[in-house]
Length: 147
Length: 89
Image (cartoon, rainbow over all chains, first blue to last red; front, side):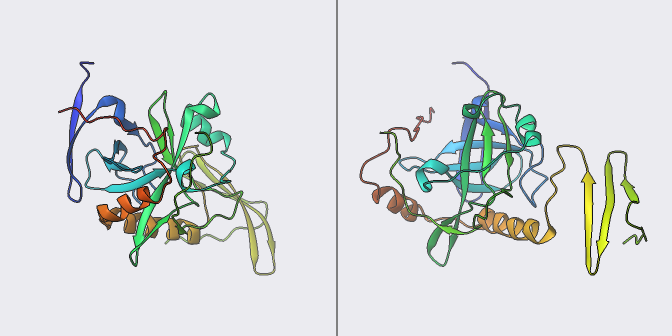
């Protein structure tokens, strides 16, 4: 377990030291924020949330695994994105939703989830075009189906 | 802004690897076909703009920790598959 670590500072959430296994490359960046191409996924202590923090830019997001936030959420990922993520099977990809805090309420972006591919440590923000999901959906916690 | 006039069936090239085909023109609608490398994401500008705004907003907002903890408290029990890897010092 003597892997390389990286120290990342977020203006909002403080300083984190993460292992290389927490880092993901985003070849396209996030939508509208193409400059940051590497992000760390950091579990937010005692919560079901994570921080998605850019490695070399001060950009941070709260994200939640989609299966904990919403039920019956499904969409088709096009071949180009599968190839970009170098995913070989559906289990290689995990889906995270970006959390927003507006007027004292929590929302998740269902229209453009963050996809992470685990074996290759690649990520992207995928815009769902085959379903009409909202960009701002109220977050209500869902009990995972598999307990 | 570069302005080009094209007819249906003609195309435009942007750089070496992006091609824009004008497929059909009907009344006030233009049907466009795009060929681009896979790292180039193609979506309608309105949608791109809304997602960008939401991203920028999310990146600038500090979500209060108590709100996130509240979301956790609403859960009947702690989910087993919420991975909580301990941060090692």
